[in-house]
Image (cartoon, rainbow, N blue to C red; front, side, top):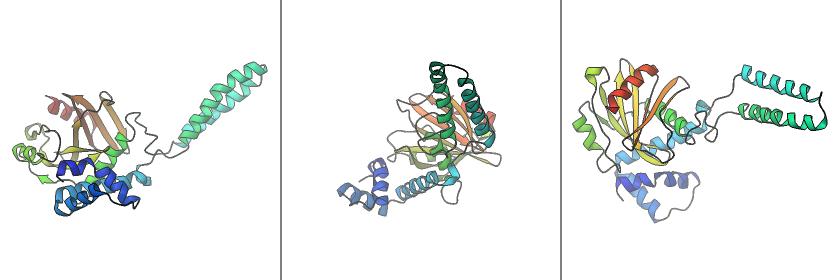
Length: 255
């Protein structure tokens, strides 16, 4: 089994390991490949650690107290208003009250993979944040360290089902540091690493999914995210860098 096929089934392999299921021939082939391929070993380790990070409290978000208080107050007002009307009017007013109550109930729980604050593909942005955070730990940021795009681009050959564009923007203040193979939403992706002053930037590149949202700028847990589609590819920039700097890098990548 080669790198491309291994990465394609890495998600199901991780599930089988977690659930202690019996391995089939494919899983046995994957295990053998992982034993001999350092690059795919790193991809599997990142996938495993990202999965754990998504399930931990580090990536959860709880609604602030003032928001819950405001919603509770609105619910109380709806109930008071309904008491002045007939039974039919009361029933009519109970609908928005119920909706507010449900909304309050949702926000009283931590955000998980199924309740994304980004309203995009389920868990896509949380996974990007988790992957970025994980990449900043020792030994996870780079599979190939080079500022030369002619070294980084060929490294992805045979490891992905597409060829990512790789360019260095040192003159514009965004030097290329290298790249790595990553794994998001069940697919292998290219991750290019750029620097800006003392900040680290991850640029994730993958074929555009049919359900991909349009351009998006978001902020979550102290990180800024810029996403866009171009020439059939999905691009995601993430860093603690200011949004305007990420937008500037987006313009360089898109040209």
